View 1 (cartoon, rainbow, N blue to C red):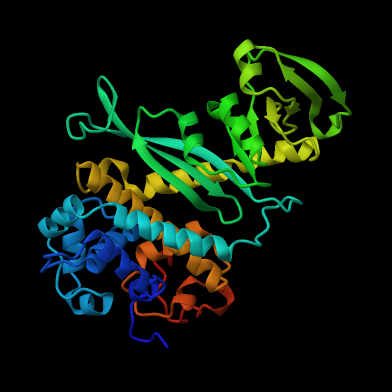
View 2: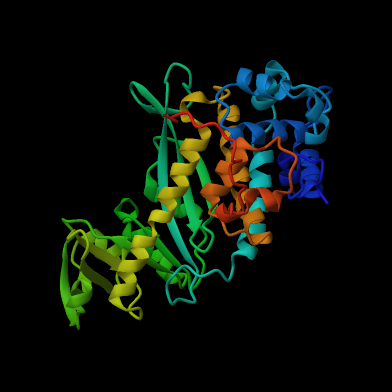
Length: 389
């Protein structure tokens, strides 16, 4: 029973604290620490992510407003903004990266057999990046352009969750295609990406590893048709072709045939051209796979909304990466709880409920269940009517 415990403390019970302590020991997170151990730092930052706090002062004020509940939330005493700022600046961000990796591994096992809406046995990943703009004068280490700073999140999302299976945080200058060098291709898996990742040498590495890819073709691509397959025109397939690359360097980087699918969206009329090394799947499935790539855009939307990008709690590289990785931990933790408790709510709804009810003392499942309008009490008969004539 969780009677008398806040929602926040119940959420924290799902964290693998034993593994977390090993990470703290590995990176020396609590060495010569007296006021704010790593466990409390994570709780404070997770509370900030859940409730959309916009500054260190905001975190301090909100937690300080409920002194009677702090101990039950895992805090020995109120959190000072200066202490939290020092912890974010000095403690190695790799500690939170390690925690995110543990949570991601746990989440992927839970979602291993989830249906993505397509008749596929393959694991499907969506690869994309998002750029987070920063002020150059405050974040000089994140150089991007002459007048702007930025960091970039390169994310590989397992669409069965959707759960991120790989995240790399870099400065804004890093090109998207370079992220392919950081990914170990999984044989039989399908990687869906946009045309920013159209690098034939790197895609050939995926083919040699037995992995498949679906991407967009560039307009100036030089190729010739080898064979035309039957096109399902009522489903929007304009052409389904086997092609060979004609460019000198392109042909050298990718010497095999590729499949080119030209598709017209029946709803919008927009025409798209896809490239893939998978010749077995129907062309309609190739188009549907690319449409599923928008799941990664929804993940980026949540990250940007939840981070309140204009309100980073620190300006150093360590502080920014600490905040990003703890935000990822909160997202994946919500996905784990949703699956383990078999909740019939979306991640968005789950996180919105937590944002307004973290300090309520109520059963977690009860708080997240959909309200039944028929079970709500009726207004009493003697209720005053404001508009009574």
